Length: 282
Length: 293
Image (cartoon, rainbow over all chains, first blue to last red; front, top):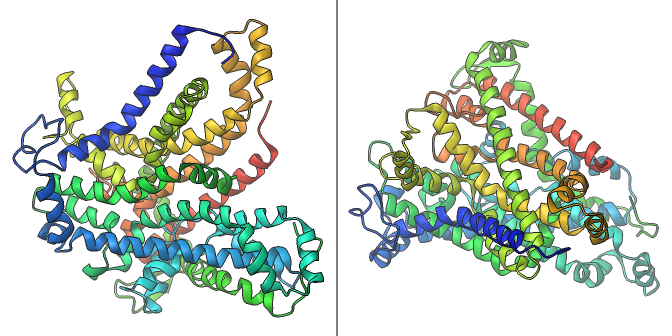
């Protein structure tokens, strides 16, 4: 701070507290709603403080398998989300670190061609070309399988770029030393490059885990088998359940369960997350 | 671009890029090509036969008032989300940058919504604004606003704008904060010695120096609003009431999966792809050049 202005300081804190309240309030309300029974949520205004149904609601949600959610326990949907998120994360990191290694450390025909092929996929989200991608997955017989949920989302230009950027900063002397010691390219990759990339991999892991966990449209299309539903996509079936009125205390409970894992990851690994986010986008 | 010292191997590099390239070709180039191709055909609903129609799918799109309305609502939606999320985030970042010791604490409290899926953000706001029992709708009624997004299209659009912006604030906040922290303290101090007050310092030093960050975020926010918010809309308003929240990316899905109009959906895909490519190019040209004064 350059100068001392008590009023400005007060104002600054007021702005920040208002911001925090604005961001926290919606989640607070849904957390509160998820602890009430249907009675409290049938008339306006709804309560602003917790009810006593938390245990019943959540145990019913996680293990119960209610008709509103298509008969699938939310615990199972969360397990599916976890498998999908981890699959996408690990797959993306593995595939793109190898590609970046080839592009940076080797010289071969079509190297730049491959680089551009990866580059053009950069900002094209799956939503845009959803119908033909769905067709392709159908032709390959990947509907209703973990493979269909995971593999099409694995290609990632962002991760490849991040690794390429990082490899370019690794000193050349390391390669020279490795070659003098007669280490082959794969030996160099395993014993030197991979350990050096640990921080980058960890930071990327957080970003990609959130990306994978929060997938929506893709699981919606690829899975018709209820045992493969993921939680972020499953909630939509409860909201738009057609003729019945939405059961808000269950919906909000599911929303809480769906947002807690990624939020914990972000908050617990905050510094790594910030590093990963800011670097992967620049 | 490449290392001075490299390894020599013949087959190995191809083996290393193979997984990435294979996935890209199968799940990216092949579908994109199919979208391009089928945008020139009309297919019957069962996929038994199709007929070459040239540009007809595109012509029909641009003669369809519904599609043009989608363009309009997409633009309103995208610009409002970007403006709302960026201005709030900038204010918070400037404030967080001023409070020296508490920055870290506030940061923790402000970044977590990044992890909330857009679909969940939508559902939560949908609940808060629910006309019959949402708390925000109740408060609005208290100040004389009849809120009902099931009937009122403008209110439905406002609902998805607020939900989408709410989720995006944390992301913008982090980038603005990083931008602010990279501005040399000496510049601010020099201006303070010249008796420029905090407001003056912000507008003549901080804000211009932030312009690369601002521009970068503008593109990212527009891309987010145009494409990543599909789930938010699908989980809540489903494009309604009467098409008022059916933005372009939602329409691609609706035309293809609900309307079963393959050619029309493919033509929309192609248009959206072109839009993304243009935005990516703009991003790279200008971000590289660093918008600055």
